[in-house]
Length: 173
Ligand SMILES: CC(C)(COP(=O)(O)OP(=O)(O)OC[C@H]1O[C@@H](n2cnc3c(N)ncnc32)[C@H](O)[C@@H]1OP(=O)(O)O)[C@@H](O)C(=O)NCCC(=O)NCCS
Image (tube, rainbow, N blue to C red; front, side):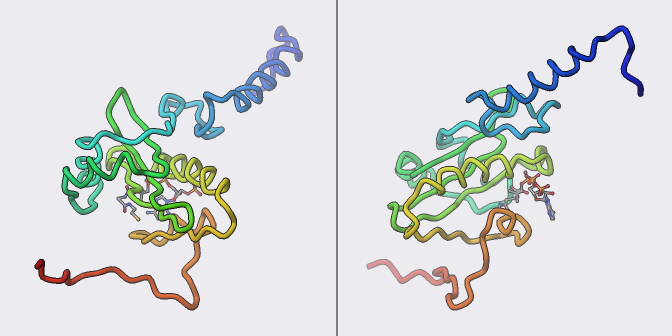
């Protein structure tokens, strides 16, 4: 397609400059540069989900159900949390928990209707910015249910350590 001769070249340059400028605005943080589609409205926000939203998005995404009382106590203690909403509805989330010496990336979940649109990348980019500000001695870990996502952000399977989880809980006293 040729550039219409009645549009001055200066207009094109101004448009390019405006688009580049948008990337420097704080409100664009977390929005991918290719977000000139519907994604522009789906901005990652640094806030924890409500208990109800959190519990239902985990289940909708196929993750295990969480105890709502435990979630009510735990969510405010997140070190960092990111959410993405579409028209008020929570559609993606992720959290970092821990004490600053050891931190864990948890609850990365995108509603099935919105998967494959780059939302987990937005969530993880925000989380990686948070992690980048932590001391270099901090141990950052996660349990990955999918093996194709976290390698993109620098996570590797440890060579000399085995991640473990408790399957058989001790009988309560
Ligand atoms: C896993 C999950 C979080 C991914 O979210 P998503 O928004 O669909 O992923 P994105 O669209 O942001 O894709 C992220 C990257 O993975 C790639 N990707 C997406 N789906 C993929 C697949 N099935 N296989 C390989 N790569 C895939 C994308 O191409 C993209 O790569 P790029 O940014 O380099 O182009 C989402 O599918 C989900 O919530 N699943 C259920 C819950 C879950 O398993 N959570 C993870 C717990 S550890």
